[in-house]
Length: 487
Image (cartoon, rainbow, N blue to C red; front, side, top):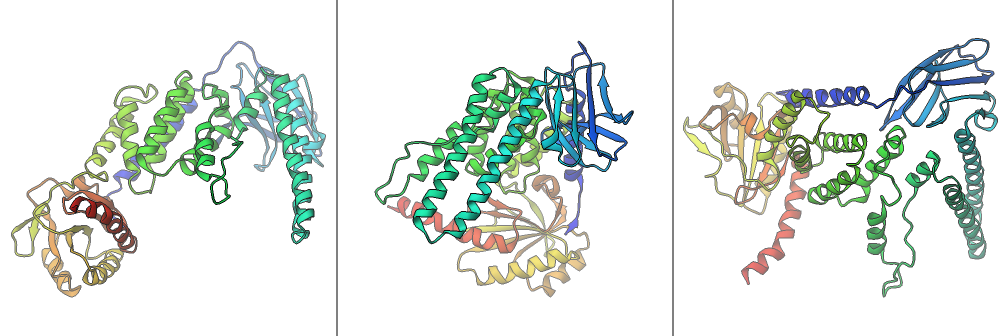
């Protein structure tokens, strides 16, 4: 695909990079007391260890320690932010994770032969309890694994299947009860916060339909409604674990119906719950904005525009520098006129007869707006596929083909060679209306937009192979609506 402009890519890179720096620079630390973590790993050949923390879906280095008398000491004159930290070796090998919260002066020892089984702590009740859970969890899942293998062996024996399944259910209940009991016994522990964050809704008393099956709609609605129930959206320690990013990703990619208005509504609800915590609010707004600015899903740019309008243009994005707000607002303004459902911007461009042809005055039930270059291999392939489809289509569809190359002679020859003289052929070098690059955010070719009879944008930036089934489905869905209106 031939790149015409790289402005969009540079904006995305700049936006992501500046925000990462902003987050790292504004992590709140307190200088009340120092931290000191002593690590001993018997059998390790490392001479250097690294202390790193999670932030969203990434990890960042906090400290480096060199071996001295068989021990590594991490220390600093300010408290570390609460969260889950990683001890890693010089070959980028992760040894284990740590809970760091109120206890920031402790020691840990283990053996390279079995790091998790042999690990022990002094002066850190949090980590002692954390690894008791890890060992218990490992043991229980090993039992479940054995039972599942056994289950496959007795797949033809219903009684055995039922008994083994009951055993698995019992173990899963033990795992759940462990967390519940821990939370009740240690309500102020950060581990309890983590256990609550790991919680998944489990619908009970599911209604049964007439066909004897459980009501899947009820199950989905219950799951969605209670998805965030036990996740503390105001506790910014959770930003320093993988949990929040993973939960966000699952919610907005798998749980929610993938439709812009639904996602916008749920995004605003979630953000409102994070407002008591500046860090959680900041990360959530940034994550959603960046996700949907870079999304390749058609129509999701509407979500990005909403995020900019509601949180950046209004000054709520307190962390963003004026230059970032200006850049991101300009990006939203460029996308706004070509969102799905909007009337396509008018273009009046020079045609092959050296006159001017208007997009809005081109009548058709469906109109394809194609931006292409005659020297672009991808464009040539797309034009061949589009011609074959349009010529055989059983409905009124026309092509408004905008050539972006400057040689009018080569352009006219290309039209004849590719036998597209029946298309509405225009060239972007001569225009009565503003630059088509800005009007349609054309950064690469080919770029395709599909309009209805009112010139509303109903699809964009799809290939012909995607456009054809899309239009067929769109027409099929409109038929009941048109039949009803005719009555």
